[in-house]
Length: 157
Length: 157
DNA sequence: CCATAACAATCAACACATTGACATATAGGC
DNA sequence: GCCTATATGTCAATGTGTTGATTGTTATGG
Image (cartoon, rainbow over all chains, first blue to last red; front, side):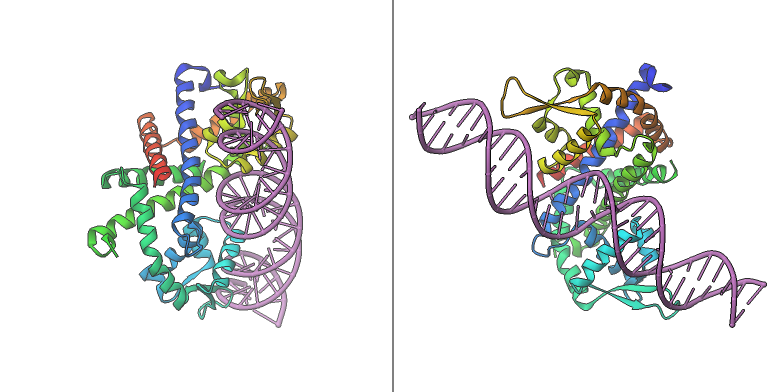
């Protein structure tokens, strides 16, 4: 019964409440609409988040370890394994033994995965620009940075 | 192959990409950490979103229909039904026949649900203030409003 | 009163996310 | 060579989210 008893506390609580509700709604909508835009490919937003991580020039050749992917996407290992299994079934990624560390396997885009990712750029781009149609570039950066700080706050809470 | 070929297009794409990745991460973290804060109650963030909606003074007496809850939280009917089932099992909510519309049932907090919600305020408050510790009130409002606009963009995309 | 339309509830399938516990294999220090 | 820490995988349980299909139930217009 701390700040929440004062008027200022109640206002503060209300703002936070709305903020997290919007976060919740935006995330659900992102996944729902993202899947619709990818209709033909049958890929979820989570799946193209993985493909996008692997397609970056820095990692494109050698691939990424599961550990690196977990840290990049901030997912549990068990969950990521399941996503990778589905991507492997689609022949979009492959798991290769890391020559430098026998324990680790590197996740890499296959040829087909790379081609698919290229083809996906168009609907992804349409999804991005469509959902952000009312945002200026400055506002997008602002939102990105605020979410970045929220993420940091949430990891240390 | 539209804007994405130009430098400006690539920058734009990159910003959007980071933005949605952060949204994804923030949402996952919110649910994960939210559950941890509610440890003793064994409630998820989705569950206290429902309780919070029902606890509002406007609806506290008469309750809300499933349809209204769906619109408020922006969930599918099938999913909300499952959440309500779990809340009913915990005796936090009850479903009552709507006197004005025989098809619809009103969802209301039970006595126990109301008491539980009151007791939950403390950990929720702690979660909110902890995760937003680096935010000024103005920044919280800013983030809330940007998410609000993103939500609108996502519904119309 | 009946037919249609709208709304509500339910079943099934799939994907995603968490935690916890356990298993396997390898790296690296002693 | 052994021991511990690390990396990955696996099994299981639970909760959340979507879609599609189906079955009721009620409102309303003819």
